[in-house]
Length: 220
Image (cartoon, rainbow, N blue to C red; front, side, top):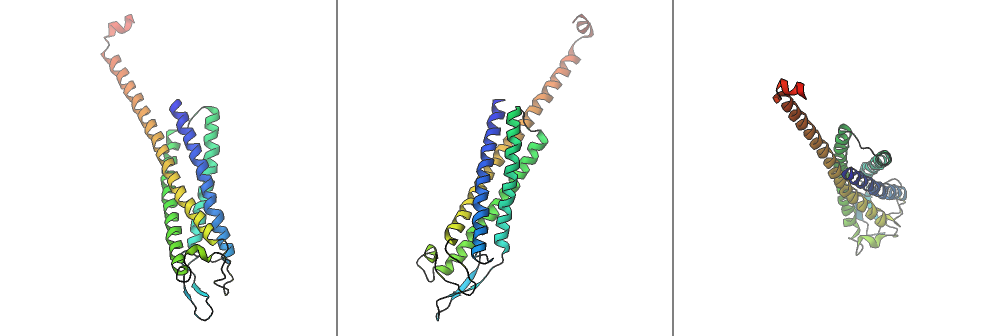
């Protein structure tokens, strides 16, 4: 029971962290798209115009930002459900079944894949954008607040911290889901071990019954 409580509490803590990190993904990217007039800077490239110093941007697909936001929303929903579900288990002093623990482990592994894909997209996409920026500015952060694209009416006041926060949230979420996958796998292994013990005890009991002479059994 002590091990069960430790695993449940560890999982709840992990899901709370995952909930916070999912917000770090969703909110900044949503704000970024709003400030960039619906455009997504991930993997966007551009050419600096010599006559007016503006950046002529060739915008990449919005699907990059939308995908990362959807992953964040999915993580948020799963974390909310799991926090409530596991909290109920803690209050009742019970634990999930083998089947639900197995489904949970598979789900955590799947979300690990989604999290790392989102993290890679944000990281590489942001690097692509910053490669354009450093052609004119000493660093990508220095373009914050600069009016570099009047034609598309974008606001650059918060893009650096927003994308940086989303990048942190995505990689942090990946690490969190790896930990949750480990906890879920440990729970499945524990269930499997208990099942093996029960099967072994049943077989040993059957062997003892079969080895007991009929006369001894009647005397007992």
